[in-house]
Length: 124
Image (cartoon, rainbow, N blue to C red; front, side, top):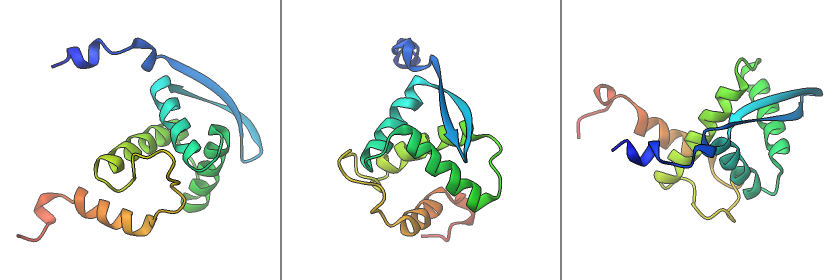
């Protein structure tokens, strides 16, 4: 079972540091190459660069939460959720389809129902 993961291209888990401006300040973000690849796909779907995507994510997270504690972890979770939402059929695997046009509220509601603990779900 583990061979599938252990023998994958080691460049996928190598980290890369990228410098960018967030909220008017120069900073850098270190992520594994796999996450940079996913972020490139997400950004490309809406005609943005990765730096533009990260800037928008940072600003909207700051606006929604009031602070940004661990932006790199947030980005990893964004990538994982993007892939999970594709598997669930909520986000098309067609990279030409923009994400901006999706009904985020409906997708979030369906996702919450899918992820709710089984004990809290009504019996079928």
